[in-house]
Length: 565
Image (cartoon, rainbow, N blue to C red; front, side):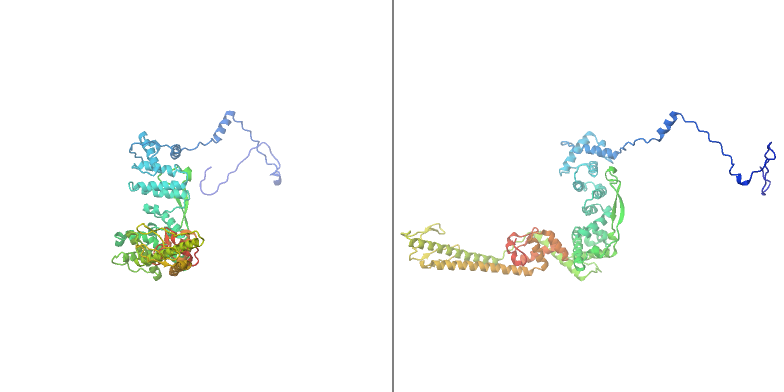
């Protein structure tokens, strides 16, 4: 049908039929008599073989386990976990991803001999590929029973060969960190951050949060540099003579200030300057290693708190870096000071006193233990010893005379009673008759004692006088010791007395550290203060090797509140 234009066209349809004059049915009955379409002809059933073929296509075939190169390596490693070889010759071995199948027979013999040496703490020179092969075993759980042992082996292997192969720093730091994360090991990551500068991101944040929350004494210089806006590496003092001192004392100063803030404000640095919320980071495990992901998964989610992004805390750490460097410059006699170091006066004084004490300790260690003999005290001790010895000699002589008189009165003695005594020449002398003669006791020339004479009738008086004199000397000695220890107790601060009490009660250095933290100081400073006072007044250290000196234990009763254990 064609169109000549755009106007609508109508078409007339003519139905031809032989039937004529048929009535038109009413409109309502039109729907009732709609003719139904003929029933559908049923389809022919498909042949039996065709049906079976379609079912085969629809059936699920059993999935066979996927075998990867990494899983094959782990299975083989478990088979060879206890394999050893006798002493073998070193054979060079270089492979990008070393496995057992990449080694020749001679290389395999050397590897298993070398691995046994490493497990016994000996680290012979070898190729890097052998080292990586052993590392692959450890990170896949082969060669250890407890994760702590695997962590220890990885660190020892890294430390033994990192100077020889710098590439180990590029890989082992991240792998050991992954190992600690998947096994949930509560270990410091500061060593990893220090050895692998490229990892100072999430790992440094995790270590900062751990230390500032629970263990500020474990802070390290490398981790703290992440929080400082002051680049100390560009300092001439640090580049020269001050490098060792700065790296040693800056972390200790931060820990000291953390304790000081906790005592002064009742909250540590994290509480004073709270960081933002944790950010969940996905960390991919054991990158570039032969690692079977069926063991620990492809990645782990690590909540990271961006503690280094806290502006007030970062500002304080920066100022502590500069303050400590200024104090170290002063103590080491370095000319020039950093300007605009603004901290509280109490804080600056605390840092200076701490560093001065640490420097004195270091100087004393370099000189060795100093033994100082006080001549006056030594002479006094000798005189006291001579007096006590003389009194004891008189007492013994009086007791003998008393026994001789009693024996003679009973008729047991009929003649002269001879008492052998050894003089300095080794000769025997006879004592006088106790009935009426004088008893002369010749003292040795070495002791310088005079002869002591007592008549026979005054034995009881001699014994009484001697005993009284001995008791008087002992009482004077006890009174002197008590007075000395009371003076020592008065010289100690209340916190130092609490520390001594904690050690006397057997609570150990953990209690001392808790007291030091609560008092805004460090346990080392507290112990040094106690020992310094003890050296001045008692002449010896009171605390040695984190324990009380056993010689002083009986005298602790004079400290007040410290019982003799």
